[in-house]
Length: 475
Image 1 (cartoon, rainbow, N blue to C red):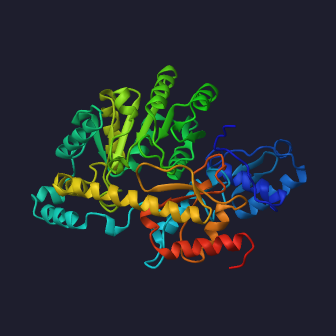
Image 2: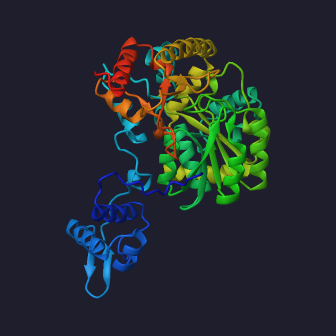
Image 3: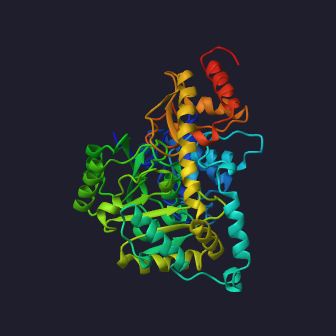
């Protein structure tokens, strides 16, 4: 059954008073109750939450003591005038904070030099083109002073947009440079598009599982999120159609090239069916293609079939070049470009010209194509080797991806990926439990492995130990 993002999954053992308090805090954090707003009556809230009136009275009194709300004799209870800052963790489903998406990101980004990160989403530094980046940095340092000090043009660096247009054409997508807007990252591109396309309360479809930061971004925009189960060839078309009929979404966000976290690729048949449904229901699709350069041969692209009508194509260069040189892009229909540019100016002003210049120089370097060819070969070898070692422990890949860095793998029956992740973290290994990617929380026994970060034998030693511990075999 398809589920939206509004859930009340309370931890076991939470008292009823604490549950009522958490409900009010969540509504305040999510701005459904704003500063000065009147709270539900005691009797009304008791009926809604199916608790006693005395429980609500005690909860309200405790919230008054905290300063979150205040009472007005004869009028009721009201939200305090100083509303707490937005809390994304309060808006979304009640995930275990030990393994939620923000935790995975924080642990991966803050890991020390001795920590191992098979759960992170990027390549090791040794896999990136350091020499090309250093040459590009030297070239940029000698450039005209304007490059080092001026804002970029509103659309972004023209030569880089021209190069992106040529690269898209190689994958069957037609976009002129004036249909391309540069952003500071793929994540920022989605953020701008959400500002442009949706309003708070609008419904957005995502794959289940999908990249966890899609959830975080959509919660930040107060969207209602609905997940559609993902198959080895794309979203389940029948359930996708059902979601369109039931929820009337404004937007669908997906990876159509190499899917994160599953490593699957969209089939041409499914792509055509999705586009037919999108046109029937006036659905806009954001196609996130940040893993494009990992593919030996271009797969199906919704933007290629659609001609940038209902599909917006985005990409970035963080995965193959450098996560430090943040640069992404949006390719969209011509009549949307002015509005997107205005939003870019409003939220970013000129954009990162230095990063754009750096990316342009690396991509124009004759060694870049050789670099990505080497990456593809290394990833193919790593996928085979890591999959074999996981299978030997009873951790089975969902599919055998044809490209990319991810393996979506199922733990042996009866094991919880969150428990495995906690135990591994205690041994300085950061894993990515499946439910962080799943809106419906149905990936309890899955882990996502980044094969480029899973070469160290200590990772498998830790996995063997924590699996044995979880089965009752000791540490």
